[in-house]
Length: 368
Length: 255
Ligand SMILES: Cc1ncc(C[n+]2csc(CCOP(=O)(O)OP(=O)(O)O)c2C)c(N)n1
Ligand code: SF4
Image 1 (cartoon, each protein chain N blue to C red):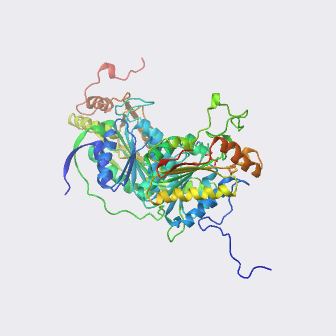
Image 2: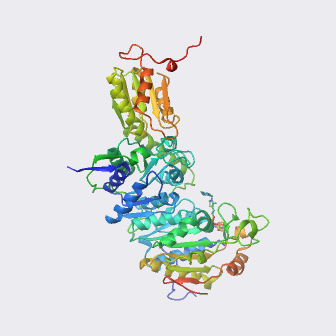
Image 3: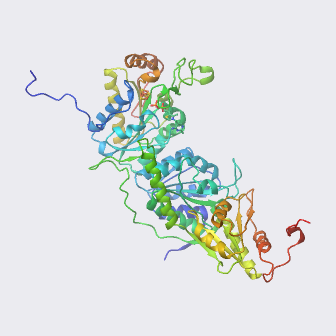
């Protein structure tokens, strides 16, 4: 089988793309994804593939658009401020139905923000981001292995549904190192009977996002929406940890889910019935599974490195069945295990064995 | 009496689709499409050509040319062309752009594609205005020229001078072929055709970036008759934007 190697998340994503048959990479430097563009600069030309350091993210995403229009696999990567510039092109990719992969190694914002990890781009990624009525599939890795695998799988999803797919990581996952198992090189790719290849012995093809003929735009939007419903049915992915008997369910994605996993193990050791639901696709969101879990748990705790973005999707899914609490970390601070453990403890039913009495300052104040 | 063996002197180029065009009467775009289609036919490259249409009046070029076509976001046209060409180096790739697309919102993409020496052909239609959005000022609007957004004329003090794109691109090392032609009469239509032919030939021979600027009429927003528009192209426009060869075989050609 394939070998195990020690890699950063950014390198692992790059190598995943290469092994998935990515033929063209276009990018513009920005911290904390610089390892990714440097890896591509080094390894794409070596393998006879295309690497361009573009003049901007606007240009990079449009280069992806051009390459993807010819039917080959193409990608770009960036971090939050650069992803904002890519929104123009992502909207065009969605409209023109061009399969493509975008990696966002998030940093703090708004504005230039900071270079530390953040989850502040959740809304931008899962609610559309650019103009118009579209979605893209958004995959949220929580390990270096997943940076590798999900980036590779993003290309298959993109081809299957003719849609842009985003890998939504953060600076922590991008820059940490872990041993990973490398994938096999993909050698077979789906046919693309819509691609621009030169109109030899066939009618000319057009890749466009302008639909001004009577009814054409509505038709496109209906097709897009039908495709999104199909994706919602087929592609929801999540990981569960100890949910069968849990009373406090933690919902977290990416880096926060990673920390939550160890907090939950500690909680279990202390006799608290905690569990985790980690969306791997943040769009499509595991709405149904959350709704089911909401029937059995006593409380849900959402942990994010933002002010409560996935929180809104959780609340929509739970629809008031059970209280949803939030623990947010702003300013690019990664939560500690202890902080999440404390929050679990405070939400655990009083009867739970091993539950310590909350300290006075943490106890909810009842009106006198 | 009709001649015995009538010789067909003109036929619609095969690369030009047989559909009505939406352009205004006297618009340069329709003429340039025809010339471009003739060149694609004569070089026998239409079946391996991929064109990129701009955002502007020529956005529907994809309906008028019988070759594979893509559309681009406004100004990103040369970036899309770059992506296509790098992915499929055997195809012939051109971008077709107005002055807003090429010289304003897409100026960075224009200069960097030229600077990298992408092996593509850029066809630049300079009509000194934004046609599609209603005749606003373009980066190429002449000093004193009235537009929707320079109602009292373009003032250099606040709006700068019109950008001369051939001259700008001629400062770069990599471009192989740069020429400006004025589409103001039959003789210059033939010059435009020759320039496009040389530009595509350069690409076919793998010589790198070629750029053809065509001074072109927009009677609607010149607010002139089609004939007077051609005079404006040949006189006022060509005075400021000299129609000549700037670079051939990678070497600057001095005026
Ligand atoms: C991002 C963006 N900004 C603005 C527009 C509106 N817009 C459409 S065409 C155009 C200008 C076109 O002018 P030009 O490139 O000179 O081409 P022409 O129509 O004169 O041929 C503008 C500003 C747009 N489509 N997209
Ligand atoms: S507005 Fe000007 S550029 Fe546009 S079609 Fe009419 S004449 Fe041509």
